[in-house]
Length: 398
Image (cartoon, rainbow, N blue to C red; front, side, top):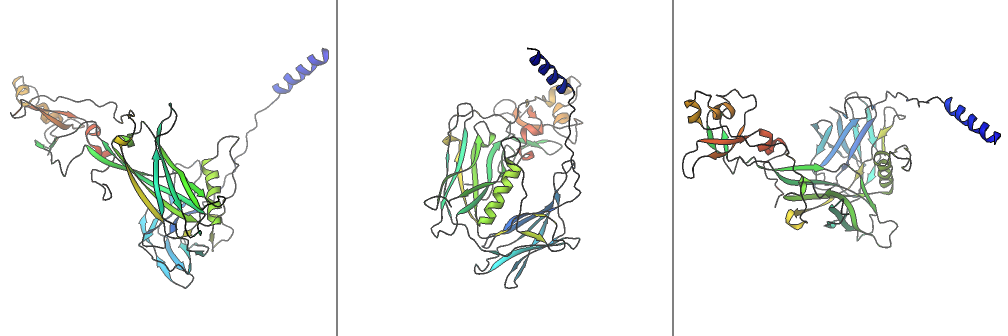
């Protein structure tokens, strides 16, 4: 018993003597080059994004590499320049490359630093067979699930990567049938100036990979691409998604697997430990300098589907607008009688009024068939959907 008591006292004393240990954080002043993109060998455009890494303590999230000279080079001495689009993005039109040759990317920065990728064989993606979806999920977490299906009849491609762009229709809280030119209220041009229906788009921000290398057949079936929660505004009217498919070599696939582990699967004790990400881009100026990125060469395949709200269960969509109220500015005539300010001018006609945030007229107040005696109105964020999207119908929209 005495031994047990002594042991307990020793444990308490030891615990009381513990001091917190703070892991020292090393300060790395290096700003490494990051190159993202695929050299498209077919008729589609090639887009390359070049940036620099930033410290966690920095206030900026990204540092684009500006004024670089970017070219696609072939092993037969052909050269194809890319044009700077701004913000570290570079592009060129369809290259239609000769698939019997190898190609690489060359980057020369504004500081005359030279970077090149390895010469890579052209590896074209097979067509996407179909995009499917279901509405399966748990009772507490229902949603729309998107899948892709593909196969390679030539048996050349066993590793794949996908990204996507999703687009959807959304509506403002109130539909405006009128507008002000600053001096008076006019009927709205419903065809060219509809600000109640807009389209919004978003792109994928995760790495989606698949492989048929260990399968009996070279077929990718029901590969998960993304999910949309049932209450999302994206599903309120009509939703569309375009999936792009890339063919990968074994080295490229391993690069993206490693990148995915380091960027998306860290945070718990069960996640993979960070590891070095080795790409196929190198610094000619300083061979010891790390460069982040992997350049592939090949044609991509893409496919788009549309999903209407009518095809989905009767899910309740969470409204984006939660504090919108309809205002009644009043009638011009009666406020003059009482010596008050003309409220339509004050709140809506911004050239005449002095309201700091002019309202947008929504509908007319008056007897049916008679002239308006006033207008209902609301704040711009509740009426003008172009603050969050575009009221121009996309060219691909059905």
